[in-house]
Image 1 (cartoon, helix red, strand yellow):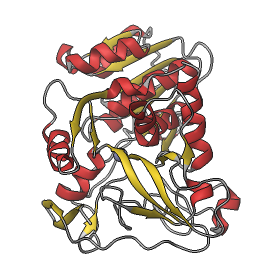
Image 2 (cartoon, protein in one colour):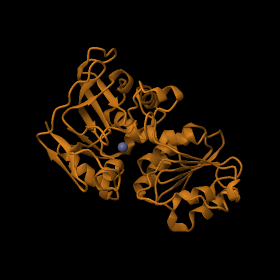
Image 3 (cartoon, helix red, strand yellow):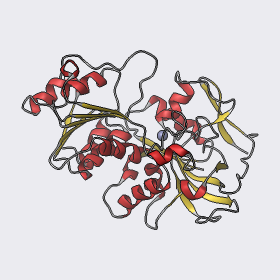
Image 4 (cartoon, rainbow, N blue to C red):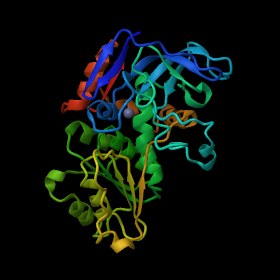
Length: 354
Ligand SMILES: [Zn+2]
């Protein structure tokens, strides 16, 4: 079958002889993508500095798919069903799940497997091990584009807003307004933030940030971003900061711009390479500032993604707006990845329909 595979670091290509997935008994399913989206984390997998990947790894973790085959123990799905496939697929049979640890149960990043440690979704067919706990039914009236943006971008951005424990009336800063940041903006609004300061410059993202509910959009180009936030908050800083983009410098900046005593910083962004994520001694109150920092991977699994799509169904959020580029034909996934890598000015996310 055709698949988009990682040949070696820095080289991904379409192949026609990838092995077809095997149906896992008793709970598994085999599926075929109806829409796929390449992601910045796929770019990191191909071009980044992460751990060694399996040989000829099939890439991809964002898709909406049709069920092709189900194993004997599958209860809720049948061939032909349209489903959203979560980017994060925890093994709900792992004991640590009972302790609330779904994303790192058993080992770090165990939930982040598709297209990283096991074959991903950029193929004519792919498999999941446990259909009933993994696949999310796409409701009538939720478009392919909206459903596709629920599986990673929206659940990630909303994870940031949830972990920030936003209260009614909060002032929230979202640093970086790519797809995840834009969803964090909307998530903060839905959680009750009064004021959302979005930090970013690309015009397509600035426009969407306003549509999703940002009250102000700040730019690095107008001077020190910490100063800009402090100036706008009477010197006290934001109640919460959600980090979704930028370089290593944003981590200490977030500590600098969040309130003493009750401030929360949630990091959703990836820091490549080695070294440290530094907490400044001064704004960290020399270790006693009363600021909380959380380092988070997005939530996944069936119930989570079905909740995401319920927000879409009832008009609370329109993640499909993130799709700025649509490509048709399976082979176009290669072009989609390059678009995500080079990010032309008008791009937020790509949808590829095979
Ligand atoms: Zn992704």
